[in-house]
Image (cartoon, rainbow, N blue to C red; front, side, top):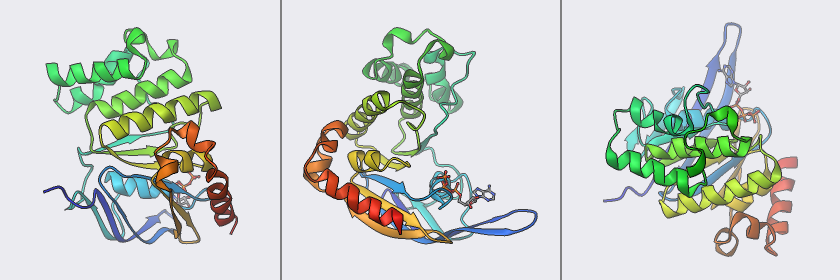
Length: 255
Ligand SMILES: Nc1ncnc2c1ncn2[C@@H]1O[C@H](COP(=O)(O)OP(=O)(O)OP(=O)(O)O)[C@@H](O)[C@H]1O
């Protein structure tokens, strides 16, 4: 039976211990993400968005509370979770194809089927012609697309995306948002995005959580109406309801 939740955070607190102080960064925070849902976290700098993603990735332990991935308590990084960062982290000495295959290699998952699937994804994201190029020969947008293919190649059920498009110009960002949303919907992936771009948050998500306060908590949840979220990210931006949603989110950020 399909678990009813892809991700559950239950009363999670994260305190960082430095040499000189304890930083109570997050919590208590409780949230759930349904399978196939696209959730976005927004909030002022330092409010703990990346901390929440690292907790979901199993990269850092919670100080208190529980993190569950598909009903299993998370104690270390889960193979069901893929993580994509602002920096594309491509290895400059490997071709794009070799970069994309890296995750499969490291996990011992190289097979005709997995390699074929990764190559299909490279083509789907418009990188078929540059598979044998090196990262330095690609534009920023193409590099981020390659990083997205590498993250998807290992077929994670959940994608954690930490400001993946923030270094791109507006045109490339829109293009990549559309590709990402299309691929994630097609493949029924669950996604959690962190972004500073409120338009992006509203254009790609099913739900947007506004975080804030010290220590940080969830201040507001905005559910994006079906007619807005069923459009492409570009169409969503020109939807009559978009301005109202944007103003609502902006007001919440100003508090
Ligand atoms: N490894 C760490 N050690 C100590 N403090 C940390 C560590 N990582 C994060 N922090 C602190 O925890 C708080 C939350 O940081 P975090 O990076 O999660 O916020 P954020 O909302 O993602 O910020 P930004 O939007 O600027 O990326 C901040 O006060 C930060 O200084």
